[in-house]
Image (tube, rainbow, N blue to C red; front, top):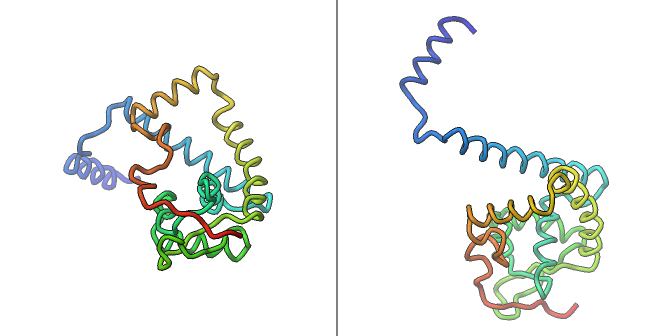
Length: 185
């Protein structure tokens, strides 16, 4: 880098200081969380794909559906829970439906709305993927912590964002739609 570039950088940094800068402790905690999440998520997706299993985005939809007593959710609610746009959740469900892992059904409480429902092949695909998912998470994250440290971490997550650990649905407000159930298979 030339002296001119160095001078320009210094001048720009002085002219445009970082607003409300993180403390060193805040920066390290935030950077650690982001780096850990990205490392683990990318490796899970890489291993799932290497094994010919569902990619991580598809896994997220399947795990959300299996968590429902009816194994199904309205498309709009599924999108909210997966934090995807309506077009984003439509693309994922289209892909899963093409593979027979989910099916769309009319919502029995409102025929204008569609539900995504987990199929038996979808559950089988999820179970295969879970073995890779769980092993990777344990290897890169959970396995390096004691039970006590896991409990402390859980408490810290809940303290930082109430409900992030204990809420049955996430994000806040998700799941506040009318009850629904899929049609019999």
